[in-house]
Length: 316
Ligand code: SER
Image (tube, rainbow, N blue to C red; front, side, top):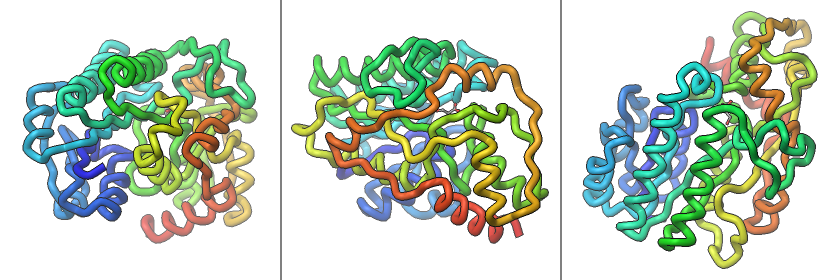
């Protein structure tokens, strides 16, 4: 990657991926695109930024030409729970932004990175050690848009030679920008509430296991996949990747190592619970490990120490 356009730069992943990539590829070579949510000052002042609608293909093409972009990273998405509240909007935003990125990359012979998700799986998927290639019949509009985006990425790679690649991210835990409208959001909120109140009311039930990952691993995975030798990639869209699998009880126990009197209560959200029940308990990410050397650095204990340390300073 030489000149990188990051769509959705103000979001949970984008707000950390832009500085991460600027560090590797140079400040002026990473263009942060945002629409309604303002960018953090560090991003605004750190390199090129464009206020643009990712659903407007013409505008996207002119920005791509302006900066001679060779790689588009599309982080624009309506997440799972929010998508169930407004399926039409979720489909439109998730699919049109992806289609524009692929179509433009077809014209410019560029590369596209698309995050897929554990949400691309469904209730008929094997739930434990979910294989790379398996049954995928998601039951949320978010999941349906993600599996469609995976297939469209492979189609553009096969048919037009677009270098389309992607990852099936698990729930991403981070401490800069909050996620919004996802089913795995509880695993971020629990750390904020642990620091603020020493207690948290969880909207998923005990025993709900889901794959998760700390943000530094998620950022590194994106860059490593995009730089991977294409001749080694059997798969493209998208790779299972995971770092840990836990339920609310397990994350609470990890927090209690640092905050012994932390209390966990439950008030289950039926929409989120149904979504979580349709997703894997734990994915098998051996294809990513074999094809491009994926290996996470953070486990639950390591992530918890770091999250609590960072949030203690941030929330002081
Ligand atoms: N974090 C996302 C969500 O919960 C899953 O990819 O919607």
